[in-house]
Each structure stands twice: as C-alpha cells, then as structure tokens.
Image (cartoon, rainbow, N blue to C red):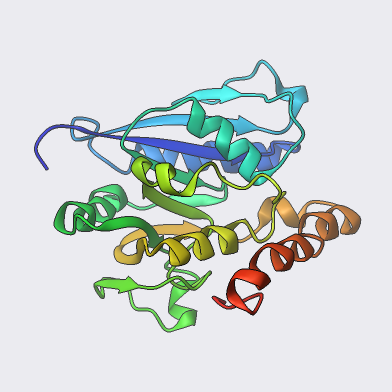
Length: 239
C-alpha cells in the first residue's frame, strides 16, 4: 500500500455500567492490536453518552462528551466533523476487530476506484446469512447482509454527494437510511469477506428499559417510511 494509511474511527459508547465500559475498552484494544501501526494509523474518536464518566478518557484516542441529546447520526456527525482522513469507519462499541481487518477492507478501494463504501464480515452473524469467510467481495445494499450497520467504512469524499448523516434517526433505521442513500446515488458498496470484525449484538440496547428500547427502535420506522416511501414506492425496499 506504500505510505501509511490513516483511518478515522468513530466509536459510539454508553458506559453506564462497568460491563458496558469494559466492552468499549475491549473494542479499542482489539482495534489497536489489529494492525501494524507503521502501516495503518487509527485516529480514534469515542463519543461517550454516559456524562457521569467525564472527564474520563479511554486509551488510544480522544473521548468526547457531547452536550447534545443522543442520536446515532447526530453523534456520528460530531465525530466526522472532528476528523479529516480520507477514510472514515463508523462503529458500535460492541465489536472485536480481527488482525488485518483494515488491511483487507482497504484492498478493494485500491483495486476499484469507483468503490465508495464497504463493511467487514462478522464471523458470528454472516455465516447464518449464507455468507462464507474469505469468499471475495459481495456487492449489495441489504442491511445485515452486505451492509453491516455496526461497522461501516467509507471514503470521506462521498459526503460531498450524500451530505451529513440524517440526524432525524436516533438509533434504528440509521443503517437503512445509509443503504438507501448509497443505492439512490449509485455509490457502490461491498461486503469484504476477508475483513473480519465480530459484532456482539446490541449489548447496549438490551441494557435499556423496554420503553427506551421502543423509543430507539420502533418509533424510528415512522420517519423512515415518510422519507423513503415517496422516493421508492415502498418503505423497506432494501431489507
């Protein structure tokens, strides 16, 4: 790859318990241990929702405590605005990065100049969806299939076309909106089956009250349908 590649990694965290805080720590440790720092530099921004932790700083990056109310896209936009590398990776904190995941996910971007976005494969989730590890690139826009909403890697340049992430999404449907936006703009996205990042599946969400879970999930579909149904003639066309 030649010179060192910089990747801005934005991780959303909610360390309201020691278990959830440790999950973020484990995520960061696996990230920093996954690549040779002489070849790849991770610029890490952790956006922490648990304000009582302030001024605590996670190792390996900068921890930010926004004054704004939580919103998945709102907080991601804060992180994006603080960074400047050519590549951005938006991440949940319930991830474990395998060795060389970034080296592998960068390969198709060097190989195909028209590639805009990619996701790594999860060795826990994707085999259940019929995907094999180390089975090439899978072009597509299906959420939880080609698009791993928990880890999305893209060229910063596409923001000139997409604009900022839509901050009307608090949590659910954010990945569906990203998917539809790529699809409508004809921006290519692939699942890279040789880049492995495991997802521990909604550990933070499941720690919330039933009322809060509904607020973060079911209520989001109303806005999603309102936005996309007129454009596509159907709401969840890309599931």
